[in-house]
Image (cartoon, rainbow, N blue to C red; front, side, top):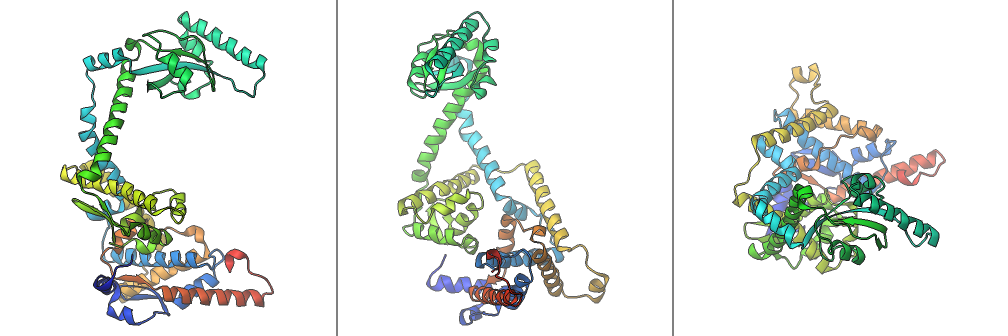
Length: 461
């Protein structure tokens, strides 16, 4: 779920490559990382010679960002950085970290307030406003003939007779509601008005342990039973507690924006549309979409959320109204507010949780080192003492060549880890250089296809 102005814009440019970047179009350099340049000609060469890389602007942009990530990764690894320090581990696993911390905070704030003792449970069951109901469904619909529907009704009546005689579990074997059948017919804990009217009326007319007459709904014929509390005490307790948790969750989340003074910027909708067009470009943006006591939600945060949201979320943004997009920002900002609440409450990962996350990152690092062949420096390399800058460039360029030959060999730097590597590093992608590389590749590919007397397939143009 980017552009800074005036002085802020100048500072951002200085941070990513110096004031000289303001006065040159960079039509030859596609990207630069710490003094290493990726030239437009090299990108075009890789695409023209590739069997699997389509000469398309978006594909080339992603390819160049891969280069940035690989260079940053290789440089850190060859400098001796294991990338499994706590800061790297937390950054590379931020979705899991957020889920763990917010879940623990939720248990502290809400879970302890919803536990029911025996007396409260008896009272809740006796009041009858919430009921644990079981049913056996025999499906029938309007597409059936009158005789077929009558046969279904008679089947339900036979099952009810069987259940009255103490054979509920045996009757349940004929249940045509698979979810309920797997739980002895349990629908769950329901409140008044939450099911279709005939079912609701029958369920809330029952006393403990009673069976309703066969009840017809649009789904078919139901044998409905309200078990006595002694049969379902634990199920009923869990169901009621879950409803209380949901109610408290809803109240807590509804109150959160007001309590933390959430303010969504008037420019938020326009910024969301901008981020949706190019999430990669926005990943390091600190442009504020919303602020609240103790934190803020930025365009960079939104860009990273797009990794987790369904693809259709980004596709729906261009047609969404400004109000829809502001509500979208507010919904995502709630996660940032909850995270701020966890910090205030002192919620933290356990050493075991941090250890598991560190092991995950260690596996990612090992896989990338293997793909880039960073553990196989030649004897000549080490003996000659080649500068790290040169080694990094050679390793990354060789890997890009292998990807161009076989895109299936791609092992990307996971985006959360890439974000951590980019934070504070000197890197930049030049749109003018990208356009130059794209035009060169398209022209060269067209020339090759023309010389071969063929029309390039759509994906290779």
